Length: 174
Length: 174
Image 1: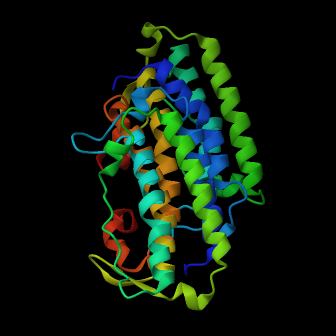
Image 2 (image 1 turned 180 degrees about the horizontal axis):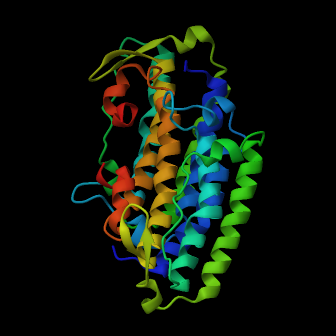
């Protein structure tokens, strides 16, 4: 499917509410669970999404749209959430993500992006030239990818509890 | 993590609302999308979850709790939803799933299951002896497994649109 802002927006808009519905008030046995050492819990993932709103999607889109001399993105810190989320509750993170996403989409909406603008390029520190269209598609795909991750982390907590049904649940061994 | 009804219930309770928040009103380009021939769309998955409420979880729990002569479960028809969902909208399926899940959990709650009851066994057509505890753990794990599937199906629609970022999104090739 080609990227189309009209289709990507409703997906980007609903991620905070989806995460809230799935996670708010859920016992910490689920929301703090991980897939093992050095893997993320649902709590960690929400922190990661917050960091993306602050430093990745809209800031990178700005770099592309400005078309200045230096169009190279700051490398994204995939571990910043450990620091930023410290001492916060999951409820606070869900509120923060909702607020930041709303701001991000307000900014995006205000740009009234044209097809020509969506084809503008920035420079990814690893990949080189990437278009604004690719960045925005990645933003939406990244949301649902992390939603899948959260659901997978939760499923795995019952890896043993499901007994022989594990054979029908490939997610347990992914 | 061991199965604990107190922890499983809040997960089972919120699945209909999570799916509604994620899917209701989303363009059909997302909700009817699949991972290729003979794979399921989010629409199909909701139909599958409905079929589970009708024929799998509570009906099988009843067979176990009755401890009659024949404790063998009916095989679950993993393709029934194509027939049952025909002509329905996604909104109708989300309503139906919510209603059926509410009824299922009311039934479950009414049983006030003891540890001894959770250890009772039924006979799975493929696996042989399984406990009620394993069945209920599978119910919860099955929910989040299918939530992960829905998110994955949606992510994959942007497999090409994300350009080089595909290298950072292993879900695209799962």
